[in-house]
Image 1 (cartoon, rainbow, N blue to C red):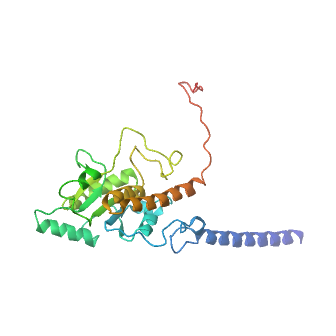
Image 2: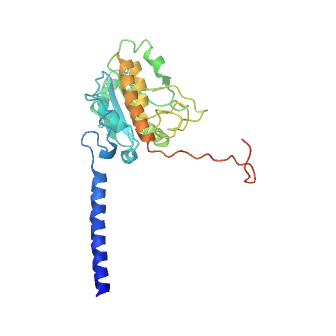
Image 3: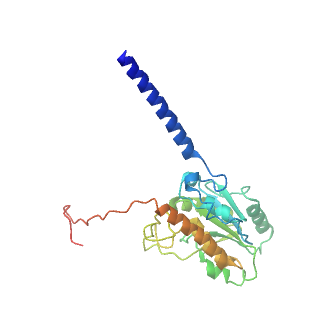
Length: 263
């Protein structure tokens, strides 16, 4: 009898624990309908109540892996801007976006087509790039206003693959530009910058949100204000994320043989 009573009590406890676990999981899975983030890490208080208006059209190719990444900035960026298209995929091609298709067709019809579209990526021997300020001040673009800015969102490796896969399409109507960068120096981390969510591979690399903000400062008539608003949102995201980090413990510097060296 005692053993039967113990089994019944055990079953009751397990049942209640299962209910609690299910309820806890459901609570964790609740998603904010506005910012599409879990309610416990909702960012609605830092997203502008009205999307920021821009003359520039922003098109972002969002790598599929980034959809699962908790620190991706594009979902928040797209809610901050009213003229931003996000395409999930690994390359841009004809049929993905109406504005890109239109620019592609215009370029084919007119050999003297002056491009108002730019795609953001550091230059290389196989894909030379202009610094965006220099491109903006060139005689061919000085009178333009309705720019199209194309960005690749993913890890450095994925972004490079996405750019190369899209190049045969983009090269027909868009020019490659970049912000200042230095591959000779290491990139920052969340521990030494209030604008970095993930470790960057080299100096000048930054999140898509920060890169777009800096570009809009150059392209938009009221670019300084737009950049400031977007950077403030990003800074709040980084501050929020940093509040969950554990302090890093000092690691002694080791010399050959595994012995602790003097610092």
